[in-house]
Amino acid sequence: MADLNPAKLTIDGQDYELPVLKPTAGPNVLDIRKLYGQADVFTYDPGFTSTASCDSTITYIDGDKGELWYRGYPIEQLAEKSHYLEVCYLLLHGELPSKEQMVDFENRITRHTMVHEQMHYFFRGFRRDSHPMATMVGVVGAMSAFYHDSTDISDEWQREVAAMRLIAKLPTIAAMAYKYSIGQPFVYPRNDLDYAANFLHMCFAVPAEDYVVKPELARAMDRIFTLHADHEQNASTSTVRLAGSSGANPFACIAAGIACLWGPAHGGANQACLEMLKEIGTVDRIPEYIAKAKDKNDPFRLMGFGHRVYKNFDPRAKVMKESADEVLDLLGIENNETLKVAKELERIALEDEYFVSKKLYPNVDFYSGIILSAMGFPTSMFTPIFAMSRTVGWISQWKEMIGDPQNKIGRPRQLYVGSDRRDYVDVSSR
Ligand code: CMC
Image (cartoon, rainbow, N blue to C red; front, side, top):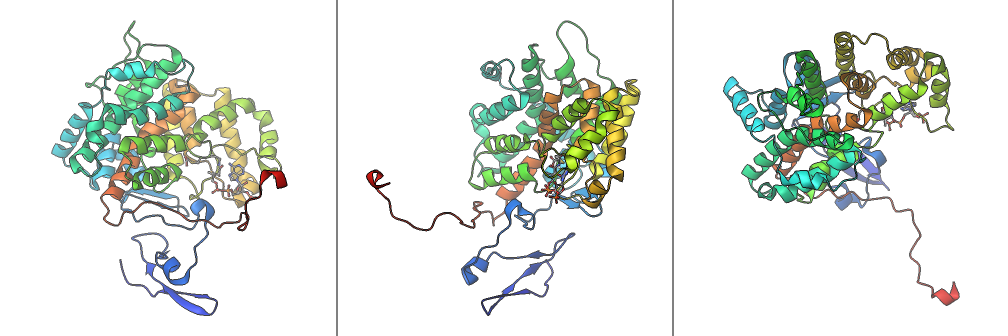
């Protein structure tokens, strides 16, 4: 990192110098690591809006320009020219694979797609109507019980095997969670199909008849996986890193990430968005919901709009919108009511002063639900699909952290505003 002039900070007449770090791209970063030791002060940043929690070489976002790069490659190029497993290799290893490396990687992933047969019994312990995300949090956490031969985080080979297992088995687990929730038999993975086609097959095939995956749908599915593969230090990724910083095993860490992703402000927004579109129901009711979103006294927000980092547009949303058009065209769904509501809501919000001034644009979740719904997925499967796509990002970030000699347990401090020290009062005197 290049040398920059240090920043100067004065507290109570005492001067302190803070090193300024220059990233490859993005704003410079003040290094406050020694501040507490030198000046006896903490920094205060709820929601981490001004805090870089780590250095990373994986993903870069420019929120003002609406750019997203994986290892330097713009998301639009990867979505158009690459495919999900190649993107997985890129995220995990830092470079695009050679032909041989790609074949080897695909073979290794394919050899890990089945889950331990005893896991089938584990699934049966869940209530029949469990949300697939609830099942996934439990089952992925339980992977450390089924695959304890890849939980030693100090062993590089075991870390690699854990990464392969997670990327390979998450689609199987997500599809099983779905099948279980609708009372259908589990469908085993098919290694003659590619990653996305295999997932569609495990979700929609039944033993009673043949199911042929449409290649265009598999391609759209693959693109959804690619668009969700990583997103730098978002809430769930930070959760995975924080859990991993204590030395927890990778399966436990990914389960923690899945739990965090479930919230409606994060990955749960795709389900919440489609439910909102259905609740609005018809185009004439949109103004009522726009008014609710703008009302400070109403907690309602337009789901699928706004982003902490993107203040221009979400580049994933652009690609997703094109994909949505293609899929709906392919399936002959031209203008169903939900789609009409979505299009009109987008049009009105993009012109409305409230949304324009606050830079609230449609995010990736606005369109993904429309595609997934057209493909036949119920809303409860939207967030599990996000979780399985993001697993490669989580595991890449986890591996980067474990391999970093500077890694130490994440331990934020606080601004204490509770009661001052006081003495215990016996109950008879209270
Ligand atoms: N509808 C209406 N108003 C909104 C919305 C929205 N969707 N999002 C933000 N605002 C308003 C908010 O009320 C606030 O207004 P004011 O300044 O007057 O108090 C202002 O915009 C800034 O909002 P914020 O909550 O401080 O922004 P944030 O960066 O903390 O939140 C967000 C980002 C994504 C959580 C938020 O925009 C939101 O809740 N959006 C809806 C949920 C959603 O679609 N989430 C998916 C995000 S993309 C995928 C992912 O990360 O998983």
